[in-house]
Length: 402
Image (cartoon, rainbow, N blue to C red; front, side, top):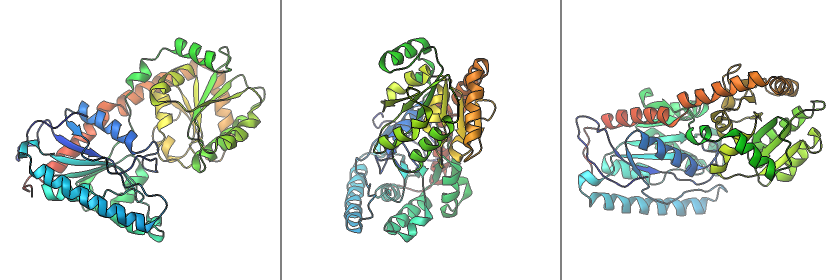
């Protein structure tokens, strides 16, 4: 993210805006399964593509998963003090050096934004949200007060950009004007995935892991933790275990507290056919994807599937379950095969079909990579963010900073 520079006018939104880009959470959650910082980095890249300057206004985080009301109160007080300091700092700057908008990534009832709404209100600048989750069931638990704060932030926002249809529907009743709702398709930078050579990546992975280069390699990537992710690993083990004498090997990428349970779930596949590859750094994932042939992931109860998107960016066809996350980014019959939920036989059949037909899977993979570049790349995200920013700025153009 670059520093603050440039200027603005009240009549027309500027081509370049100075944006305070913030996340209240570094942890993974339903709205940001890779964590708020991951989404923050992606949004920063897209804003740069759109020609804007983004900077991090604060490293204050409000993560509180346990439902400890005393800690919640302490965080609220700390957030309020941080907001006051930021407002004073920005008011001491020339108008042309102040932020022109505040954008918060990854809002959730376990990590509400305790500073952004107050700063934006005091400065008279637009407040925007990317990646929101409003779970009404939390109103009955220890985070009820924080759900209210998250709801107030959504209601205050001049633009709410949701990454999934479910999150958009959750936020809709809180948004005063439907025009403030925007859909931001899940996105990434496809360049590293297209630039990785398959042959070199395959040789490197075969040298590291007990993999046979003569066999097709299936890739499954996901956290090895209790909950929906573990359920996906279990579905995968059951489905692939139905395939007699499979010609492929499975590369299982991920780690976590449930690693032993994942190994147990994959045992039915057979000895030597499932290789646990461990967790991989973000910059190593393109090479792992490029080395493999098919991405297989049931996506059980997932609404946002980054790994499926990454695999398609690398040119892999996908076999996935018909859950919202995969359904939003896989084109059935074109970039992969989407099988009915809870149908292990259908999932296994799709894997057999693609394994047996190299020409079909290569054609699907090429279409998948092209689709990601067109619909889920930085340029597409930049255009959506730019429209939302300009709409929000136009709405508040007549308000003077406080």
